[in-house]
Length: 278
Image (cartoon, rainbow, N blue to C red; front, top):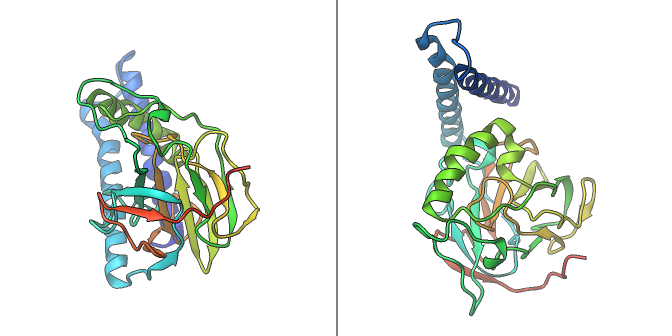
């Protein structure tokens, strides 16, 4: 698909999702003026578009695999990887929002303890219980800030069974209607040059030290790790893309200098050189 075709598909899919939501809400109060089966048409449309977009990206990757771009890591200290492209592609089960080669990482400091998943209790935890919360996010290369926002709240963790279900059944629907920025939460997009862009998601509210248009240097602290958007716990979601628009961008493979591409569960350490956020 061309960029224009991808943009059209994204817009059409979004409008169909809005229609489905409106239909469901209206159905609680009035009898809809058409047969029951007609209501399934937009739902089928959403599924067909999603499958068509996925198939298109799969064909593009098979025909012309994108080149891996090497950058510095986006954090310092000791971390472990989750949902890594070293294990599967697409790493998050979808090509949407340029996530084909995205990675999630959580802080694992020496002597520290990250709360484990709880089946029943506690249902949710405060963000400061997680060592990743507030960790500095650093520029992976000399770059230009294309987008930076940090106005969305950092919600409680969603790492229990009930909270996890709430995230995907209730919040997930709301964020889908809210669009890409509600899914990734507060985020930063950097233009690394030569058609490559880096995106950091789930940034901590109020932590930005940069704004759109700023020039940053590799290793410069730009913000802090948070828990905004579609997130189960404070963590860093990082990805490279071929464009600044999350709706139309395609994922680009990355490799971090001195680290490579850590697999799920793999722990890695990056020497701390960055200065604190001003």
